[in-house]
Image (cartoon, rainbow, N blue to C red; front, side, top):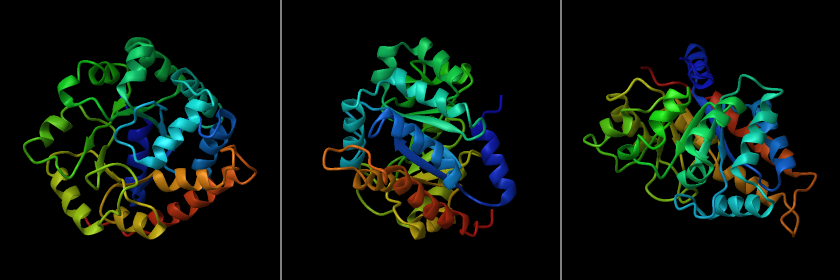
Length: 278
């Protein structure tokens, strides 16, 4: 079974370039603006979209993404509305891969089987659930794979060679390498260190490896794209959104453009990367 994610990475491999993966929070700062932003991302050069599921206790996220989640929750965003947003996005775009990223609790409350059926129907391609380790694969990972969704796992600088096979066992779509130990948005990624880590993970898997955390500029996105199969940017886009809001935290005429313009600049960085010889 081939997902949109598999198709996109196969296309990019033929083109000889890395993927540009963008992360935004569903429903931030409100549902209508959020849908406009998600629709603008592929036009601005995003190859894969990660859509955050708002949650009250996002322990892996830094202050920017936590605040985005709180803005979305305050605006009434729910997991059901997040799936609705994906459905609306799919009316005009049936090719851009879309991954839901978040925590297990909202899915558990929604009901795993119902969630997987609704996510698949809505047009979701994959899941990144940061608080479910491989030991819990029966909870969501295996049912997700059976439902035809990719289950994308995080590997970190502390994931050693002994742990990697467990992390990779049921992973599909791509591997998300977290370039720094800690929360999102905390520090800058070092391309050389990342290059060594990617090479190490590639000894264990044939899946594409995308690198996130600590990438904020076109130059940084380009440096990472030269070492990996994809650069992931989230916090910088969320910050651009936040800086466009009014004093009450509401969207302004600048909001969608602020995210789209930064996306376009970052995409140019990734597309300018020279891929390291395999």
